[in-house]
Image (cartoon, rainbow, N blue to C red):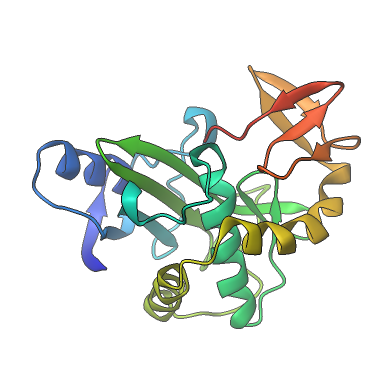
Length: 211
């Protein structure tokens, strides 16, 4: 994984997308910034708080993804691998469906995914040094570069979706007191039923992460 470190950028995700669209790089490739001024969060929300938090975007070739991974559940797959990587450093972070990192009952970060040409682009924001009001920061002190290095080592192992999902489903019960959003609606996860492809069924309707 080639990694480009920047002091400041509007959005690591936007920056990386433009590199791909203009044929300036080829995956695997990552962009990391110490600060971003217009970071992109879930549903188009901003995610730009805190200098030296984790602002990371990386691109992988679609051909290099696990064969059993459905693209609509890619955010769960790569979020869970990061969650497991953080666990290696001693964190008790957990993953709220489909792609939010939580410390106890507060959000500490999240991930969104997009397909650009023949690449999957994953954007990660994680509060590792400080957090804005109503959010939480990571429960451990961790060196950002060491975290990124270990994360990419774990991604390179190319665990199957089945392997990752078998662990994730054991922790899905933690979602019961929380909500997700679909079609601009806030929906309770209390009675959500997790499906083998990463989608959930709520009130008879199947919902995919699509992030």
